Length: 412
Image (cartoon, rainbow, N blue to C red; front, side, top):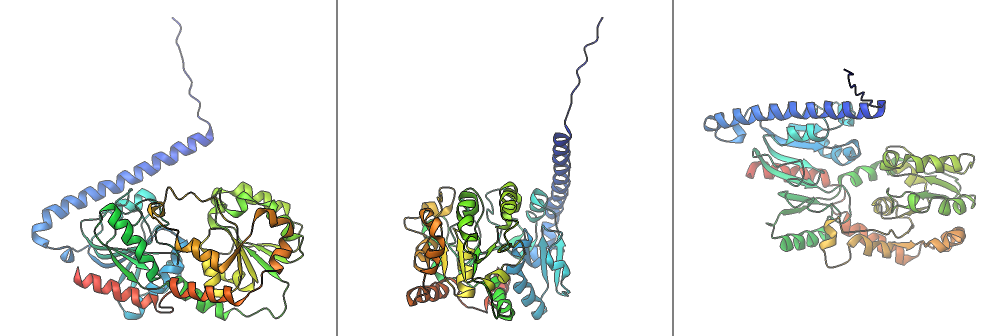
């Protein structure tokens, strides 16, 4: 009798992927198992402990940071807690979070893993107030813990609060805003969706406060070539992906200094596109690629910015008070909360007032287009107006945030 043998071959790439999935699943099951044990303990101790505040795991104030990109937003808040001598538990999904480089005494940092591993821990927190930039609470894997009194979401940009994926901020108890203008759209969505009204507290913008102090300390270049900063968003609708050489070829031909600062996500999601463009301009001495973590150094040097729908346009406008040009994106709002609104977004309306649209048919005459963009009083006044609306309580955001969190923890 002949034996039938079947050989199964798995290539190294697939094998590595399967191994990663198995390891990730095992880690998630481990923490879910621990979470189940904690739930059982809490259930049997409920009659003894009475409230979450008497739970030995209770933390009055918690920040959750999902990645290093939000450190500039959270650092002023951490500094304020440290200055006041109030214990803050800082939970992070980055083991290279800059918080670990700080010499805090009252801010207690802890790496809690990434993805589902982190969410398994967060879903069973015992805390007074939890502050985070992460959207989608009670929508995806991140759930409300029964032992958390108050969830506060802080906006990470001074632009529209409805530019999250659907239902991104619906189930928070409060939203911390950068400007009062953001309130109306949130209220409209609450009414349309039958949601209870959240607390909307305008606190300002911590990272703009911090960047403003730092940018003032950067010395001016006494003599420099006219400098254009290309600072787009990422994805198929973004500036570099859509136009690439069509825009950069005529720009480099001007002889001006060109700084290209891709969005951080582009290195992860669009490496082939970046490599192609870097190779194309590697011999052009007037082209500089900026991958520094902080953008203020390039912004300080630039005489004008060209972007798309990236929120960095407002950072540049508010911090540097210089002209901007933008290329309109073919932006599909359907996946976002903003799609349910009945009016144009503040950021799109404001962009029309503070900047000049650069159309594809004008790329070949880019030098003339930029030269005729005079920084007239109309643009300057529009920039000041936008700054007042979107960046309120300048320099005071961290103090206002900590005051709010203390009030919520005491009242909840």
